[in-house]
Length: 391
Image (cartoon, rainbow, N blue to C red; front, side, top):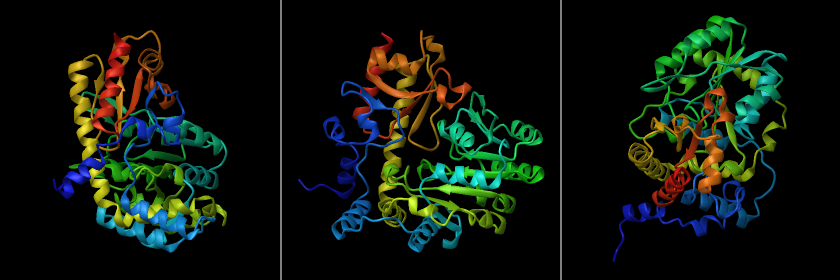
């Protein structure tokens, strides 16, 4: 029987077995014993985009496995992607190579601020934010997200209070990890207005930008307004959207004279610490990975809908607002009244490894982060193990 292109693509995202996945050497599949089903770290199970496989195979066959070197092709590829996918005009020369997002943020915080300066973050938030701010010699200033019946929101009053109290920078996570929220253009404009008023910098981690789900609108921070572009820097990468976290390549985007000058103070050898395969994979992803990414987003959206239905019917005490971006689900398990942190209970009683909430800040206690970037069958097994843990 002849298989259509659409059916072939669908099969590529749904015929991945646990036996195949357990042959992998990545952290997700080696961190726990084989009787534990992992759904904790932000690493998808889907096979790589064909364009990336072709690019890396060609490089390996050529013996092109040496040290990385900043390449204009990377900035050109990101420029094309930003315009076609995000409607954002970025000049190739606006793009600077970084080994990864967090090292870029850390090094620029060191250059821009003085030891002890406050940096605002919005818990619950990506745990390395706490660690990297401290590594930069700065002080974490928490401005938790607001939570109501509609979900999480940016607390602009809290942000202003932090700036008024002397915080010198805001580390924005957009789209937000772990909640999956996408900020509106107006919210980002207001952030920029506050930053200008108080003379603060905004560093926007936009690593999940390619993973905005269908029907949602993502506004890059630097595109929100001229004020945003004047005092902001964006940190982007193909690593989350195309599942390349081990290949070490990110991009720093600046669009003002002042921010370009700041980035220009990075050591000349900074980009060499990126991976050459990461650069080649990112170029292939940005230029030729759009169709694959669309299929990933379709699969993730279906899984998100499936999880929402499962929570309603099988876990009514868990509160869950489906994300508008990312393949990560943030579950509020506090009403389960478990005798220990939810992550520990589900691991011990269900042999399923989920992301624990406490590392995301004080507002993360009693919560879980679940990776839904997998097949529907494996997601069902995750849910079954969670049910087992609650019996």
